[in-house]
Image (cartoon, rainbow, N blue to C red; front, top):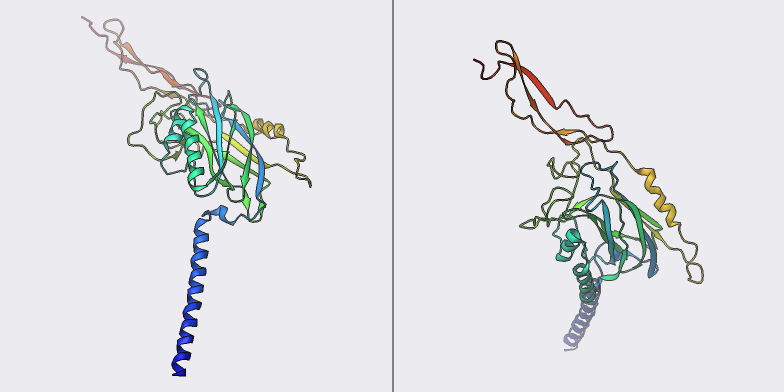
Length: 337
């Protein structure tokens, strides 16, 4: 009888231990499921960090001579719209479908819907820490800047800037992590290249609105993709496009009292624009030959006929020059009696 009681007590003790361990495991798993998933989940740096963000447009006629917009409107950049967030949220992502807000921004520069989407994500899943913006740039080459605040649980930065004019093209950064383990990064510089939002099928900067149905995913525009001679970024002789813009994010310093200390020289950052402007050779593009014209000349003698072609795209930056646009050959005169 005593043996049975002892076995029962051991059994109850074992059950209680298992229950405690199980409860503890569930608690840990439950807590873990509430944490952001991804690179930002391991950020153990101080809670908040402030940064300056400088966007530099490098969209010059020398670097991108093909169909470069000179008027109605000239080459320029929209305002910059960005967000600091956790890995539970994506403002945009390559090879995925753009949201309605992202479509409106990429096609028309309208930020209202995109901002409402960001706010909704922040309210529902607490994935957004803050929104930031910077003024538009009225030319293809120039700079704009603002400040942003990152949090240890929201250490990722994303932003977009629309290429103006364009069907639905933009540049930006998706989920750049400013935290590295137990400290915030001092500076990050990223060269930027054009993206297609996948919502408009235009090939050129000034293409009329032509909705992509069904909608395509966000894709990077390269010197050979889309593979169509009409595309404004089509440079088949290049291995890759030169960067069309650059962003530099610099951590703002604070003194021992927690007040702002000496800050980076943003003008100096902007002055780097001219140092890296490249010249992209643009070859002459010509049309096909026209039909041969009438044969002209004196009866009984060899006459001549001509055909012509025209320049579709003038060469630039030491690109291949245009060949002769007229060609002549011998013939027997027409209507000769």
